[in-house]
Image (cartoon, rainbow, N blue to C red):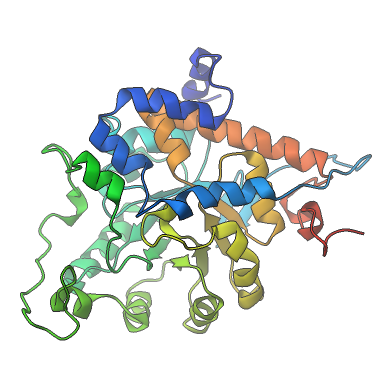
Length: 373
């Protein structure tokens, strides 16, 4: 057993579910950092709906099923994972813990969980890779400086990252009122270290399409499908696109030769009043038609949520805020414990719904009109 797992017995008994970490995390970070970590855009309707939509779904239990030899292992993009739960890309993790992403990757490695490292990590991507004992993917924003983007891809490849995840749903940032009210700004000792040396946007005053907050240079540099095709031409790594919330974009992703899509509304941090990701998932799965894997993030707080996502067609899920809460409260041990809880809950939920392994999970697990006998 990895030494980190031995330390789980030191976790307070009051932390029995991943949601219990939130209060402990809140006590350990500043008001400004908490606004960044916990908040969403505008009225935060989508932020809350992500979780509420999972709670509305009901599971169908089954009895007397043969569960011998079961497990949660899966293969995804030619890579083996112990269970279908990965750590989502989250920026600036030193905001909540002095070791930041280095503690996170240690916790993920102890559970052999995949981790997607943010472009805006507060630790160099190479340092994170050197600590990793589990598969790493690199989340990429296609930068206005395309030469710099090319360099990021080369760095990720050289460091041993095994896939690229293009976050495509944030060509501009949403207005996060909670952050505004808290006066959030990055402290001097936290920065997106992997973006050092990137050239700034050239000024384009008065460019067509400019507005109060969106100048022409920003809009002109926003990535398009052509930029995704360019990115694919740079690398042999699998390329997934994150932020797919419409069937049209899912079909286009397949047509463009992408290797996977991630159903995501950016955790409710970009455009408010979008639907919950679990509600959109069946539409995306249907549009993809099994040609490439579909993953999902947003609202996962229980292992039963993971099971519901698998039942509706996701191959794996990403969790974000839960492990950040664990990181803030207890460092690497907290991250490890969050993953441990979710995996244990998933295994129990699978057994009680008659699913011996992830391949046995299907639509009949969720109680809907279509699934009922």
